[in-house]
Image 1 (cartoon, rainbow, N blue to C red):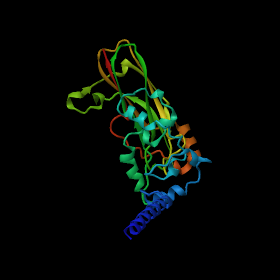
Image 2 (image 1 turned 30 degrees about the vertical axis):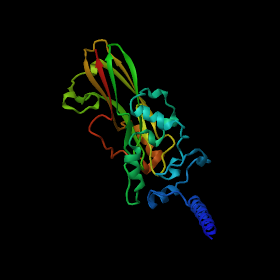
Image 3 (image 1 turned 90 degrees about the vertical axis):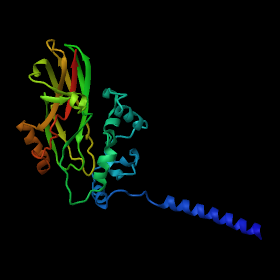
Image 4 (image 1 turned 135 degrees about the vertical axis):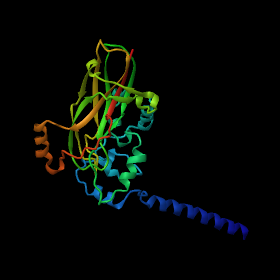
Length: 283
């Protein structure tokens, strides 16, 4: 009798495990975002054909938000970590499959995902630039040296308008060396533009709506070409890149004709410091 009872108990446990396992397979993935986000993303109907087979599903946002993104490289996480920890700093090595992913920008999961996942239809977003990395340090630079710094720009979360911005050079009067805000690292500079030739490429950047689906050409590389003139005295300098609504009236007319009410010429929120800063130590 005991053997029969034990046998029945074992069979019951096996059936229970099988049933529980089947139940888990039948259940859809746990949704961690709002119903409003679900509905507005599902209503989007301009995804490329066959997009689903190329996109890896993330557990924290609707898969369709990624429909315009390139396929995620298998080594994406490891490569991104190397750049975040400054073990790699040459961004020209990266293909678009890396830098055009939402997760390429640091703090995307901790800061941006919560904003998107809690979306409700009563809210609207302002299209503002995001930039990464925000700065670059060059040391032991000799007069006459030329170099190109590279960064990436894209529109921030929940942006629903187009804005065309001019990128231009600024020389901040005060700066913290290497973005370290210790008072000991504060420097002052005046009339230093005479020591540098700077060219920004491209000069005009179109920031597209980032919601409800990130656009195809969302992230864009930005290059800053710098030449240190021969008469530059030793010292530490800062060259900044700032953005403002384009002054090119022809381009504004083209944008208005193409995007009508979805194009804006106001509501640019600025951080109070250059969007991007190059720190140069001339020896």
